[in-house]
Length: 60
Image (cartoon, rainbow, N blue to C red; front, side, top):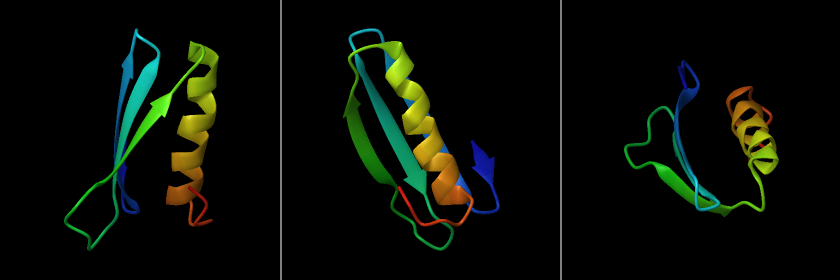
């Protein structure tokens, strides 16, 4: 994902985890998060958290 609010990169692994990197405007270092998932359906809430963050709610 890329937008005026920042950038996000996602890698979803078949082994049951995801890597999420978020870059905020004006900050050079990405914020990285490792997320363990029980099933692929849990990935949707991870995407929602990043969208909320970019929408300006400040909730990540």
